[in-house]
Amino acid sequence: MSPQFVDFDADGKLDIVAGIFDGSPHLVRGSAQGWQAPEQILDRNGARIVFNQFWNFDTKKWDSTHAHDAPGHQREGHLTSAVAFDWDGDGDLDLLLGDHSTGRVFLRRNEGSATQPRFATVNEPVLANGKPIDVPGTVATLRLVDWNHDGLLDLAAGGMGDVYGQNPGGGVCIFLNVGSKTRTSYAAPVTLLEPSQKGAHEPTRPDSGLYMDFGDLDADGDLDLIVGGYSHWTPVPRELSADEKQRATELEAQIAAADKDYQALFEPINKAIEGLEGEAQEKKYTELYAAQKDAFAAVGKRRQALQTELESLIPAPKRESFVWFYEHLAGKAAPAK
Image (cartoon, helix red, strand yellow):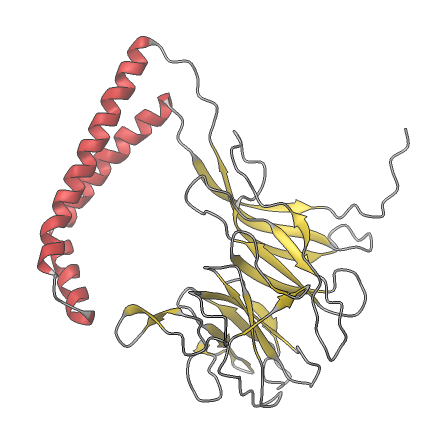
């Protein structure tokens, strides 16, 4: 998620590095013929780079391991973001990895070379002000940027937050690199965009799944902030008449009945796949679902019509993605009175 363009293998061509939801960082190599097929980035032993939770492509199930935890840092984590960065100034690219589950950031050191990376087997916690980084709302994405123009790359993080409900969302913070070219060291986070508390009645900001980038969009010499993400809001309800209130109650009951009908269609399918695993389970599920697809579609269509009518009376919470522009105003003179 949130890909980075970088010359990963020092061959003079841009590659793409990205973490994705399967729990591993991936590489798409650039070549004279165009982009190559995505590949998993492996450690020095040829194993996938993962935290704890990951999708096992052999068993086709979610799996877990603690084989790569650093001593004293055993915790459940899900690797979904990655950036390549020369952490120690030795001329090759290391990996900074973001955790979707806990908000931590980890380092995989490159123990090989710029042209032949060989990554360590342990996820090393990255510290800020002497404490493990803990991004509010968990990590949605990581970005490297020289925010304060001191020649050192700082680490920016966007928070995921609650993507589906009304619990707090994410924000954007930046960890300034107070070390050197050969010794990266991060200070305590500086908040660029406060974590969202939601509760708005119209789309006012990115609330969850914050993916940010930086650029001088207004050509004034400083870096502005671009943020993509979901905005959550609930329109202000209107006063209903007695008849409308009664109709809303009827619709809620009919929607509940449709949900029961939907569940009833699933019950024999779930029972039939009990005890099956992997491809056998997937095959049986697909076969039985296809046999009932018209019934599923009919229930879904009925429920959608009921939900649409209900929302014309009682507005439901909304969620929609936008891209937001935040102008960097630091250092600008106050407007004349």
